[in-house]
Length: 128
Image 1 (tube, rainbow, N blue to C red):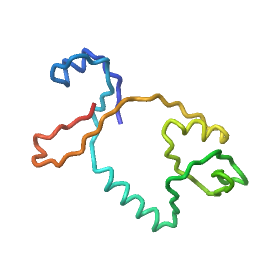
Image 2 (cartoon, rainbow, N blue to C red):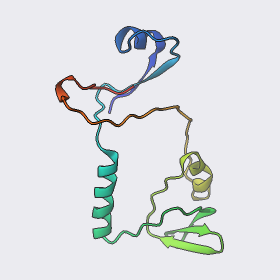
Image 3 (cartoon, rainbow, N blue to C red):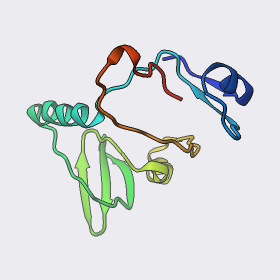
Image 4 (cartoon, rainbow, N blue to C red):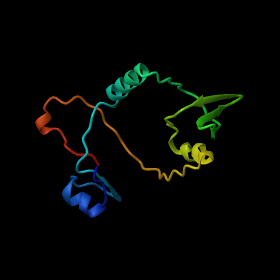
């Protein structure tokens, strides 16, 4: 997927109608959109069918490598796994530090709108 940092003037001239003040943005000319809820539900169903176990709403304290597996400490308990998907937002860097994985993240302000599209021919074709 192509992505480039777009200068504020380029955004004003090329993409947006006049706005008060734009500092800049990320432009994805090849980006498509989809139904993230449907996608994640179907992905979870496929993973469940393959034997994947899901654990939600857990607060992991530390994560280490132990005997070629991942060991996640949650309070007094340790959860062992062959592989994990970590969805911890900005806390991910601290959680993965013990595994020697450096995560370089920067907070980016985003807005998302989900709306039914009646006429796909006139719907927006890009994201900013």
